[in-house]
Amino acid sequence: MRIRRTALAAAGLGLALVLAACGQNVAAPEAPAESEAPTGGVKVGVILPETESSARWEGFDKPLLEEAMRAEGLDADIQNALGDEQKFSTLADSMLASGVKVLVIASISSESGSAVAAKAKAQGIPTIDYDRLNLGGSSDYYVSFDNEKVGELQGQGLVQALDASGKANPAIIEIEGAPTDNNATLFYNGQQRVLKPKYDSGQYRLVQSQQIEDWDNQIGGTTFEQILTANGGQVDGVVAANDGLAGAIITVLAKYGLNGQVPVTGQDATPDGLQAILRGDQYMTVYKPIKQEAEAAAKLAAALAKGDTAAADALATQSVNDPKGNRDVKSVLLEPQLITRENVKVVVDDGAVPASDICVADTTAACQELGISTS
Image (tube, rainbow, N blue to C red; front, side, top):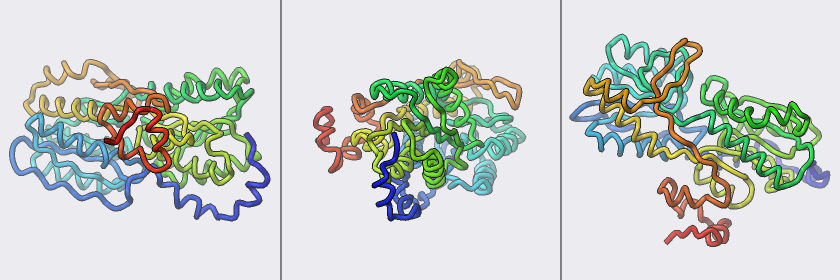
């Protein structure tokens, strides 16, 4: 698909103005309220990474972890590092000093996560890597989704959309996650299982694949536009590693009148990502039932808080290889699900996102058609 010349000529808005809207898949920028430290029972510390790249950490993980930890009889101190590695380290120090029995960490980078895990290990405190594996680390367990499968679903979704369009030799741009996040590597590896054979055979043409520092949506949108214009405005499909990056890309596509014509992938099944799917601007997302992830982390934490490693091992029956640490980490890996317009209702029926969050003015007709009711 090529940018229409009239659209290019009429595009008087500057990039800064365009990207001001890129946060459509991002949580509100204000800092989250800090949880009060636990006051009784078995203490567990939980550190989440940030709020800027995805709405999931404060909107989904935090409340679900609070609920799951309470159900296991644990007092969880859940804090967010706000993308600041020094704050991440300081929060860990504070939690360890307060006497937590287990530390659950979704780290900003493998380096900071591994450093925190080493401190905990030196004090005899077990650590669970949550959602993101810290390469070269020492955490006892890992709870996440099958992240290569996530990438595979993104690749399959893009192929499905391009097959439906009948476009020959489509030009593909890949906008990937942070180079410091091992999950981003796993997503990419899964995507390439599906897409690389098509690139190698000449069936698809890869324009460029670019990792985005810190999963920064604004950088993602800027980078995408630079690649798009350098390719003469031609793009037929976009791999976006999550819904936040997809939202930034869709804003750029809309600037050139291409939104809804170019399939864009995503991940996290955020309310804004699901709205974009219902509008036809985003083709798919990947639903990861975070409630299951939170519950698995809570059950593991409860077993470890009691010193019951046999119970923890019975939960973590899978393993993930840490090539940097040359070790296999006992893991709980949950199954992700591909979501397109036809099955958005699955996410609502599962209680992950309220219908009222996705059935807004410009998606009401789609919700009615798909049987998604806000009443």
